[in-house]
Each structure stands twice: as structure tokens, then as C-alpha cells.
Length: 157
Image (cartoon, rainbow, N blue to C red; front, side, top):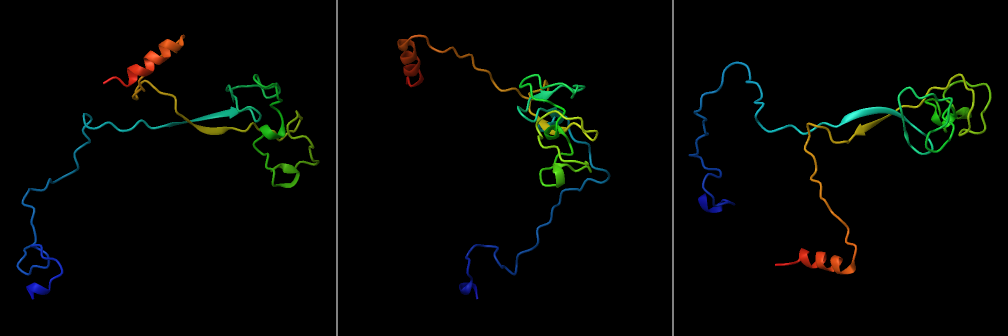
């Protein structure tokens, strides 16, 4: 019967093999706390809520008066495209029951249902507790000979 086995390694389907027992004593009681000197956890990315201009996506400061225009592109901020209730697939392109359609969605209006659209984005700016990428001080060469010398220095043996 040993000759008809598919695998010839010791331990495979051996009838005399005994189950392995772990003779180490098991820890009784609650689990010990995580060691704070152990491996560091990755820096979690924070969420940032902010309003952005519908036209140029410039972040708008908290407390911005939406009766004014965008500081960067001068498009009106109190318009349908800047509103939370703007939905192109609904009737009059608004989730609220407005009495009449507003033809120009990117122009200022006096809608009483206006509510500024707020987006949630990830804050990927480096903070003080995370690892910072190494900065390289690089100055562009001013002469062609300097550029050639810098290129040759890259491949010196």
C-alpha cells in the first residue's frame, strides 16, 4: 500500500502520525494591552468638509457670503449649480418643489430653498505626526555644459 501513494513525503497519510500538541502554557485572563513601543499604525487620512466653487473648484472659506461672487473666477455663488438641491435628472432640475423653472443654472438667483453644497474630501496634507517625504534641493542648470556634467555625474562608476 505504500507504493500506491501519490506523494512519497513522510507524514502524508501516515497512520502512525500523532497529532501535534502545543506544550506552551496558555495565557489566562484578559488580553494584554497593545505595546505602544511596537510598530506604528499608519497615519489615518482625515475628512475635510468644505464648500467649493462649482466653476473652478476653489475651496471657499467657512462663513463665506454666498450672495457674492467667487474670489477666483467671479462666478456667482448663489446659483442652482452651487445648491445642495440641484439635481439634473429631476423636474426643473431641483429636488425642492419650486414653482417655475430657472433657465440659467449658473447665474445668480433669489431661490428661497438655496442651501450651499458642501463636499467631503480627504485631507492629504502632511501633518506633524506623520512621516514627511524627503525634500530634494535641486537647482536647474543654467548652461548646457552644466547640464551635461550633471548627466554624466549620474552614471559615474
